[in-house]
Length: 190
Image (cartoon, rainbow, N blue to C red; front, side, top):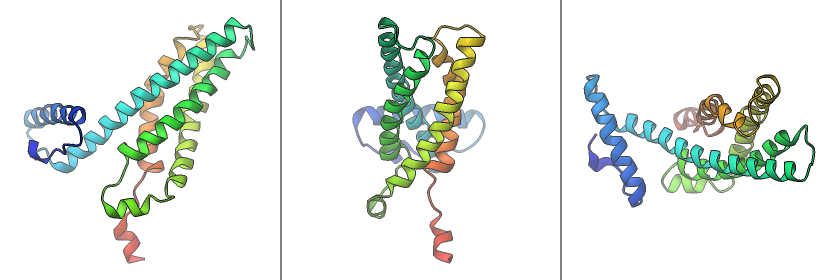
């Protein structure tokens, strides 16, 4: 693989891609392996997921914090304010995350992919909603209750600790289930 294999979609993404390319190339040289286009593309998919995840985390946390502040300022549901705020943040972040993961991270390319996408987003959205409901809602809120009520960590800090556990789970579930590409070879044989 060479630097010329990198797509020049836009200046910022190209800069990120080139930096990642040289870092990976150096790493592969150190371990005595060759960096292939396929390995580079898989790594860049993870980088894109991390960038979307970072923006998603910011949106979720800002929404959570604003909701929590409003609930606390008005004395609304004081025992559950952090959980309701978590749900509000979750709803905003799921919509944001789906849009960017579907359009940029796990997107297929080419004319054939454009034809497939007309309505094919619905099953992917449902799968992503299920996966995020499990990781972000069930696991995340379970951990939130644990951090706040058992360990007595601040309601503002607890969601940040959850990221260490929830983000890797989200990537794995989204890559291998929610946005999994169908194997066209298997489809042709059937």
